[in-house]
Image 1 (cartoon, rainbow, N blue to C red):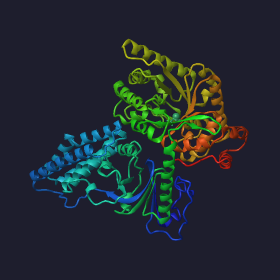
Image 2 (cartoon, rainbow, N blue to C red):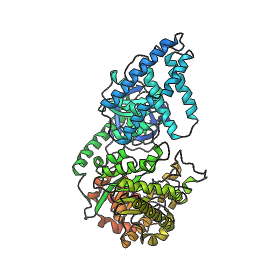
Image 3 (cartoon, helix red, strand yellow):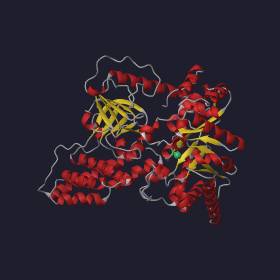
Image 4 (cartoon, rainbow, N blue to C red):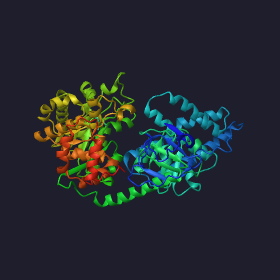
Length: 618
Ligand code: PEP
Ligand code: MG
C-alpha cells in the first residue's frame, strides 16, 4: 500500500499499479494527455475489495464531534443523554434495515442482523455507563470504550474478532452522531448525486445509509476481502478499494474521486486526463454489457461448432445469487471454505447442510460443483488449530486434512447429502496428490451414504465425486485415476504453482512464468486428451480460464467447460463465437514444441489476425 503524491509520481495518471501504461481495463483510445497536471492529484494504491469502476465526489464518513463534553459533573444527566441517544440509534438502525433496499441474499441479511444484535449488546452499553459513572461525559465514554476495545482487539489475530471491531467502530460513530444531536445518519445532509464514500473503516450497515442510486463507490483506509462491508458491497455491486492509507487525511469533502475496484486504486482530485479515461471506460463497459445482455443466455458456440459451457466460481451464497445476472451456465467451483472463514466456530452439520441446500435451490437446473474444504496454506480457519509449518503451501492442507481427520470430510459429506434433499450432487476434492487419497475419500463418502440410509435421510441417486487436478504427481497416475473418478477439474492456480515451483502468493514469482508457455500447455493438453480417451468429463476452474486469450487456448486444447470468476464470464462468452478452433489447433501444436519462454505474443497475434474478440474483463 502506498500513497503517490502528484509531485513525485511524474506522469503516473492512467498508469497501472505495476507502472505500465494501460487504459483502465478497457480497450478504448486514450485521450490526449495534457502537458500540465492538476494540483494535489493523488493516486492511492490499495487492494480491491469489490470490483468495478466509479467516478464521483467524496463524502467523508467521519463522526461529527462538535460540542462534545469530555468530563461531566452531572452523571445522571449524561446517563439520560446516553439512553436517549441509544434509543434513537436503535430506531434509526431498525428503520434503515427494514425500509431501505436491503439485499435479500442470506449472508448479507445475516450480517446485517448480527450487526443489529450487536448494537443491542448490553455488555457494550454497560461499559459505557460505567465510564460515565466514573465521571466522563457521554461522548468521551463512548470513545474511551472504543479505544479500550481497539487496543485489546488489535492484539488478537482472530479474523472474526477483528471483524467485530469494525462493527464496533461503526456503532460507536453512530452513537456519537446521535449524542451530538445529528440525530440521524449522514445520509440526511445534502449530498452529491454521485457519492464516493471515503472512510477509515465501515460497518456493513453504513452502505445502507445512502441512496443506492447515488452511492457509486467506496474508499477505505482499512478493510480486507472478507470484511462484512466488502461482502455487502459485492452483493450490491458497489466498487470498493481498501487499505488506502491516509485516504481520509488527503480527501476533502466534495473532491472528485475515481474508484478503480478492479485494480485496487483510488484517485483523489484526478486530472481531467484520468477522468476522461475512466469515463470512456465506464461508457464502453456499459455499451458492451448492453450488447452482452442480448446474447448472454444463448448457447456459446465457436465458429466451427464447438459448444462451450462458461460457468462461474463462487464461495458465497450472494455470489451464487448473481449467477443469472452475469449469464453463467452454472457454478463450476463452489469454494466451501469461504463460508467456514465467515463462521465464528466450526459449523454444525445442519448449518453446513442449510447453506448447501440454499446454493442448490438457487441453481434451478444449472450444475454446481461443491469443493470440499480447501483450508490450510493461505486459508487458515481461526478456530481450527493447525501446526506451524515453514511452507504452508506444501503442507497440511485441503484433502490431506480430511485424510488425517476423517471427521472433517465425513461431516461435510453428511452435510452435502442432507442439503441435497435427494437431488443429485457433484462433489470435488482439492489437492489430491495420489489415487489412494481419492479411494479413501470415496470410502468415507460410501460410509456417509450408508449412515444416511440407516437414518432414513434421502440419498441422491447420483453423487459424483471428482478430483481437482492441481498437483503434478497425479499426472503420472492419471490413467489409474480415470478408471474410477467421475470428473476432473483442473485447478490451474495451484497446478502452475507446483509445476513451476513458483509461489502463487509472491509478487516476484507471480509473473515470472506464464501459463501460456510450452510446458504448461503440454500438461493441459495431456490432461484433456487422457480425459477424452477415458470418457471422463474435464473442466478448468483456475483463474487462467477467466482471461479471454487463455480461454481461447483452453478451448482449442479440448476444454469445453470453463469455470471462471464471475467478473470474467462476460468477456469469455463474448470471445467464444469469434473463435475458429480448427484454425488455431494446428498452429498451437507447432507452438507447443517451441523453446520460447512464453507463447503469449504469438497467440495474441493470432487472435488479432483472426479477429478473435479479446476484450478485457469487465
Ligand atoms: C486452483 O488452484 O486453480 C483453484 C481454482 O483453487 P484455489 O484457487 O481455491 O486454490
Ligand atoms: Mg487450488
